[in-house]
Amino acid sequence: MDYTLALLFSLLHLLTAGSAAPVDVVKMKSKVKWMAEQLVVRLNKDFQAPAGLTISPPADDLDGSSSIVMVLEGYNSLISDTFNGVSQVKVDISSLTGYLDQWRQVHCTEQRPKPLVSGPLQELQSRKEFIHTVSIEALMRVKEFLHLLLKNLDNLETC
Image 1 (tube, rainbow, N blue to C red):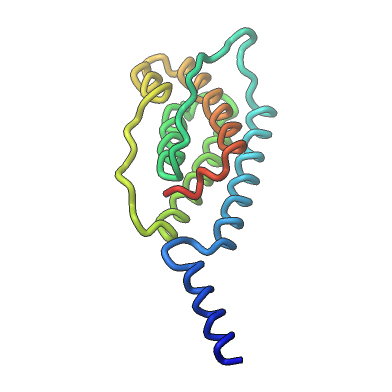
Image 2: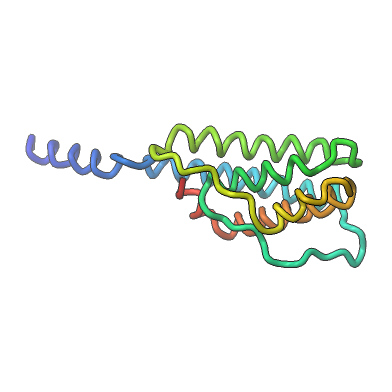
């Protein structure tokens, strides 16, 4: 009996050592999924892209939670506060990135270097003078990025 209990505790320790407990990861993914879905609903309801406007690929990379936070924060910073109807969207993006960043700081033992800005985000950051055009594309990119995130929630497990 004592041997079985000791073995059980040893196995439990092995399962949780060096990474977030599986229950924590499941909770985090569930919360991120809910937050992202709510944000997509809000974007669909409160923001309509001008007819015929499309964004060209490629999409931003999902390279772990640190890059997800960086990409979403980057797009959020490009959305003009004066753009009509986006204040709650910006708050929701900040809530999502804040939650992910806080989770990452607690559960990721090895901090990866801050990812470099590249792709569509980098291109948009170079065109900041066209504030409303950039805001529209940033909103569209956020929606595209959230759809990608929702299809690839396992990327959240990578720090």
